[in-house]
Length: 414
Ligand SMILES: [Zn+2]
Image: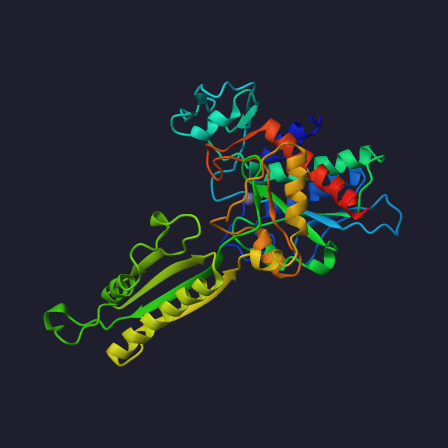
């Protein structure tokens, strides 16, 4: 269906800078997100949602669409979640461009930036023949991740408010900060969000439905060397940089991001710096399988222990922190949320695309707080870059899916 306010709403959001900052300690991490949050509050109040406020704890914009069914109706309360921040890429002065009725073949110039969206380079463009694409002007990202999600959720709520004849249960809305720096959901409070299950609307192309993510941890490793004059170093010097190489050499060489796909996990060295005296390494560890994930962390411990034993003193200091877990562990105990979304898409003749995400979502954390939260497509492509784009028609389909889920939940409960 076409929704009058969807595209203007998205463009208004996209133009507003809301980049997060991983070096900030405030919640939200940037002032620009607070400014945006206050504007969302005004908008949500204006369209007629209830209990609109910003959580002092999580900085989420929260709102409720009360049910229009009798209090006795047993309909699940559904949550809809999106994030307001944009990724680590220029987001100043975003100028969305609309390419109407794209033919699926042409190269789209990104305004006068000298950059192009070329189907030879981005074959995903071929999926959009006949659709209207919103692109950047080549100087910034677009922020469809996840402002498309926000616009879709709010447009769905607006539609329900304008069509009281559509019966629905209670809908909770949460628009959070700082997803891109992996912190936003940490402060999410399920007691402020009374829902039976929720969806993040933060996925990519049409049909995406995700309920499986990585298990994720980060390892920080300090290598302690002993620096002496290289001329008299024999049997005395311990080179911290060599310790780092030795550590890395004991990890399985093929279990790295660039050599894995699907459900294969990895160790990913993301930072290495140091001198002879001392060095630091940072790894991220990822695996869909919880026991393999635990074994990976165990392997790091074993390597550190072995090296320390070899030197007879602590030369390798390892600190491992879990970041998030595979939400499937929670969701598969009650697949209602996934089945509802799957059925809704099928009813709309959209083929659900279900696969394990090689990453995490806010739902990875929120699910483990007791609120099962799979992820729905929002439409964005080539996210986090100047080549980001979103199809208007896919955004419309996302609103359709949200509405269909809400309708099906009532239907199913009857
Ligand atoms: Zn996102």
